[in-house]
Amino acid sequence: MAPKIFRMSRSTLVLCTDCLKEHGPAPGRWDEDPLQECSICGACDSDAQEEMNNISDALQQQWEEDQPDLNDPRDFK
Image 1 (cartoon, rainbow, N blue to C red):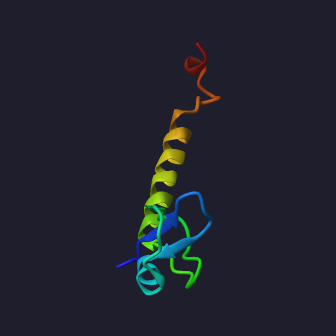
Image 2 (cartoon, rainbow, N blue to C red; image 1 turned 180 degrees about the vertical axis):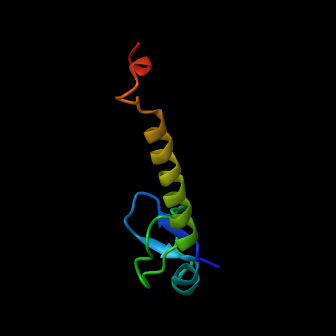
């Protein structure tokens, strides 16, 4: 299972759950930020990154399908 990644609000500090437990408790608000890497150990949430890539690919494919066909005059009404 991929680690969860958290960013301290208004900070560049990003920690995975293991580092947060090991070096915590850290005061402040921690928000999940799954596309970042842990500032200490470099862990990343590969599941979240794969899901984002899949969404991006699906949006790109939909955009390409929505583009007019330059060889079809009906697309230029």
